[in-house]
Image (cartoon, rainbow, N blue to C red; front, side):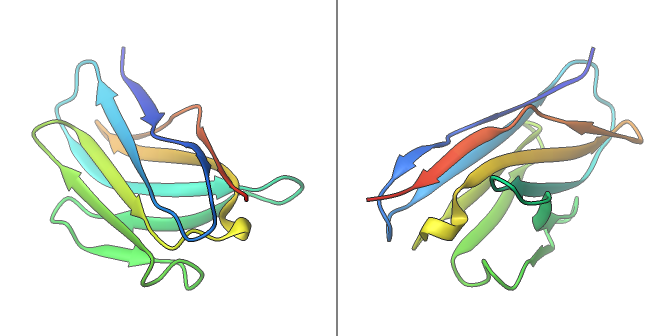
Length: 115
C-alpha cells in the first residue's frame, strides 16, 4: 500500500524558517511530479510549488524567493525549505505525489507563523 506522509510543521515566529518533508512508502515503481499545497483557515487549498522528476521547480508568486523545493528520488522524498515566513503562510501544508501513475495525498502538516 502506497502512503505519503508529511512532516516538519510547527510554530515559528515571523521571519523564521521551517523545512517540510514529504516521504512516500510502499511499492513504488515510478515517482513523478510532486506538489506542495496549502490551505489556510477559511480559504481554499492553493498550489504553492511543484517539482518534476528532473528537479525543475515552479512557485506561486506569494512564495517566490522564500521557499525552495527539492527532492531525493532515491529516498522517494521531497522537501520544502521555507524561509522568511510570514503570518499569512499559516496553513496546513499538503503534499501530492504522482506515484505509479496516480496522485497520492498526505494528511498534511500544520505550519503556524505567529509571534
